[in-house]
Length: 200
Image (cartoon, rainbow, N blue to C red; front, side):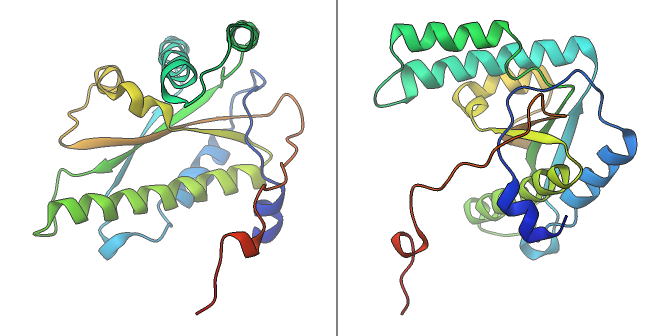
């Protein structure tokens, strides 16, 4: 699968099989992460891999809590009671239950610049590039993924779970990885190229 094909056929996966990700595939995904472009060549990223059964279940429960906050408090129009009940049924059936999660952090334990605010923004861009690399390479290996930003709605709970100091490792996102239960089908984009670009 070439890069263009990977980009055009990738879709978010939220339901995974129980099959563990092969060690070689995990290594390939992580190698893709650290090959991403990064600000100043400083590689200000850090990843925590969650794969033990106990930790997986605890982390999934936290993600579900964060997702519920998103649906009930973050959205301008929260989900209706019926929609929320339908989502909760899917949760009971195994929604977001992945054999592997990777938490991606900005690594701020070493500082390289005078302007810390800009440095953190650059570091976040670097981490996001690494996440995209992981997701695309995973897809090329027939491994699905789901990028979760909702942990930021209750990030202190996640810092506690990961046992890290937020001043040193700042959470960007958590990504679930696993073999999809069904073949993912990419959605058509709502906006066309001409809707989101101008030429000057």
